[in-house]
Length: 341
Image 1 (spheres, rainbow, N blue to C red):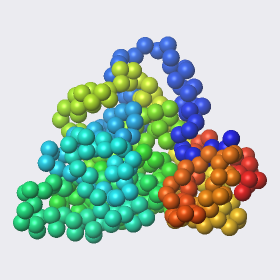
Image 2 (image 1 turned 135 degrees about the vertical axis):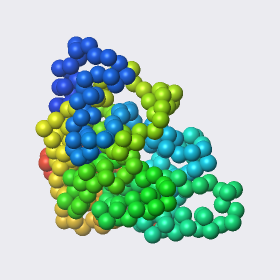
Image 3 (image 1 turned 135 degrees about the horizontal axis):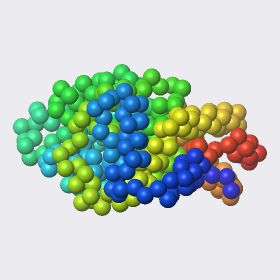
Image 4 (image 1 turned 30 degrees about the vertical axis):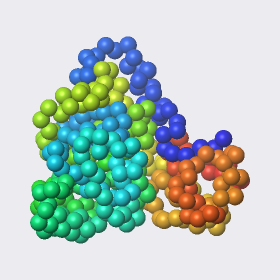
């Protein structure tokens, strides 16, 4: 069975697994106070070109998003996000469960527009009854977005400026950040994100690790008692070394970027194959997630031998599907898929 369902169906990159095996009998302190976490934090800060960066390791993406938002917002504040944002659609109300409302704006290829963020803020404060409403306290974006699209550096600069001028935090969800940085159509570097955002995450789960997300506060701005909040939410891993070691492996000798570049290369081959076969793209994605329009009959035929994700229904006969590549995707997978299309 071929698998293009997502970028975390496989276990972990062999080099990550080997580091886990090699370190298995090395006793280390718990709760992230080990030498592997320290090494990973140092490497991430250096790559961000940000000596003031403070790095924390959590297990999963939903956990990470909810905790960051909970830690940075006041009790009466909410977070602005695209209507398609992961926190608004696919996290089972985790953010709302912390007491913070997700304030959605229209999406444009998965993104929010800076001018619409500013317009939302202006309308809020122009409303004479705004003290009865949820205050906007943060802007949440993901890079890549849920649709595999990317923000340009100019868009990030505009969002950052709006947030700073209006006293909001800018949070970039980087669950798939490696694929955004490796895209051939981006002008955004990790150092740009560190400069422009108040907090961002670097995903490991979807980029070669067994699990794990790195949370980066780039301006020595970790909220007070953040570690205590992590603990109180059941998110502090006693064997924190497992997270730190994986990120240390990913950020040694450029492995994280090599994994990401490989997935982009496979995605480009996937795009070429579907173009050759005459399939229609639902929208253009420059990253490892690709979206195509399938006839429903074709879906039923292919699903006997290929795993892929059903994204959204168009009508009674057509559906948008997602194919994702990862570190584990090989040329042989593309060739096998060619024979089935």
